[in-house]
Image 1 (cartoon, one colour):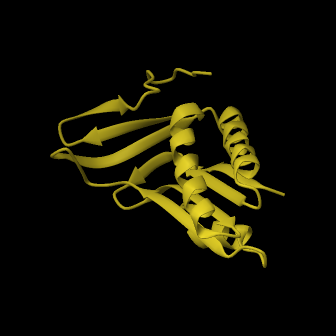
Image 2 (cartoon, one colour; image 1 turned 30 degrees about the vertical axis):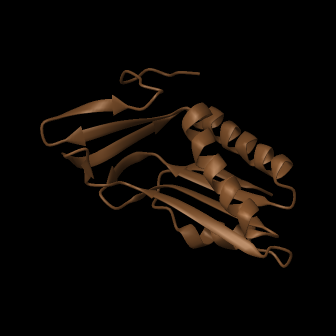
Length: 146
């Protein structure tokens, strides 16, 4: 069983760390991406994430397979939250276990970069004076990109 999911409720990181922890793992790395208040001098009020959920989960699992092939002995769990997220909320969690710490660190960084590249998740930043869809996968409201 694998954990690669899109969720609407708050993410509990320990769930994902517990999933990847096993006797042969000497290292567990965890990345949590949080909603920050300030970006380049602009105050963010909240973020709104949307996803094409079936494809997003498929792509998260694909990233997991890539990692397990590239770094032998790793186990991966990834969750990304959608909906309206407030300052400080966790948007994404990536947990990786490995027999050795260097592989766990490298695989974790690889995962977040691949998420940004291939997973159909869109982020709208809402500021005090406006809002905008952000990132390389910009979309228009209501649009589904494959």
